[in-house]
Length: 407
Image (cartoon, rainbow, N blue to C red; front, side, top):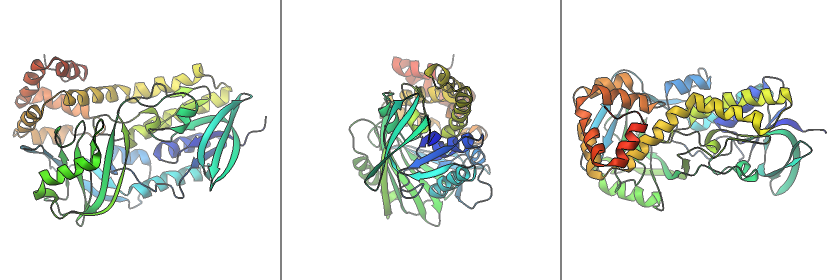
C-alpha cells in the first residue's frame, strides 16, 4: 500500500512538535497536522516553566524569556505567607506563542511536513490508517502507518480510537492584562474552597506592569464566577487590573485510561501527562514526547504497530514521570479533603522563619512532592499537617500515599 506518510502527528503544541521532530530525525516521513492558522495561537497557557524545562526545549538564545520569578506569595481569605525570594530563579515566564513556534520550527528543520487541517477521524485500513481531515470546509484523506494524538485533553484522536479521556480535570480561566504587583519577581497564589473550589488562583508578573492572572475550579462552578469572587476578596491586590484578553480551557488532572492502542499513541494533555498539583504540562510533555518518539521509531522499524508492542511507551513514561504525577495527584486530593480553616492553619505554619531558606533550596515546580517532602521532614512548624490528617482519615491516606506523612 502507498502511504502519504509514516506518521501523522495531530496537534503542533510542544508534545506534538517534539515527537514529530525526533521521529523525523530517524528518516521517517512525518506530517504535523495543526488545525489553527498559526502555531501557538490561540494560547491557553500561563507560560510558566522551570529552568529545567527551558533546557529541554533546546531553544538557545532566542529572547522569549519575559520574566524570572524567585518566590511566591500564598494567600487565603485570612492568611498570607511568602516563600522563596532568594537569588535562585525558580521559574521563567515565557512568550508561550513564540515557544510553540520555535519547537515547531525545530520539527520542520528535521524534515517534518506541516499541514493545516482539522482532524476528523481515522479508520484502520489494510494495516494502516485512513485519516479524514478538513481545511476551510474541504475534506481530504491521507494514509499513515502510525497515528499520534497530541491534540489536548479532549483528544479527537483518542475518541476516534475508543481510547477514552482523562477522567478528572478542572476548568480554568486565564487573563492577560496590566496590574502593578508588590514584587515583579514573585507570583501570587490564592487558595481556599470559597475562592477557587478544587483548584487555585494566580498572578504571574511579566514585568513593566503586565501580568498573566487566572483561576481554576472543579465541578460545575464557572471559572468566571470564581474570578469575580477573587477580585472582591482581594481588592488591595487586584484593584485597577486592566483586562486585555481572556481565555480558558480544561486541564486534565489524571491519566487517560490508556496512552496506546492499535497503531496509535497519545502524548501530552491527550494522555493526561499533566502535573495534578499545578496543572503544568510542558515539562512532562517534552519528557513523554521523547519516549513516544522512541517507541514509534522502534515500532516502525520492526513493522509492529500492535498494542502489545506500543505498550512499552506507557511503561516508559510512567517509569520516568508517573511516580511524581501520582504523588502530585495525592497531594491535590489531600488538599481537597481540607476545610478552609485547615488551609489557613497550613499557610500560617508556612510563615515559619526557616521555611524561606528551605523553600529556596528545595523549590522545584516540576517535582513538587520532593519539595513538600523535604519541607515536611525538615520543618517542625508543619506539624499541623499531621494533626489535620489524624482528624481526617481520607486526608491522612492521601498524605501517606504522597509520601508526606511523618511517622
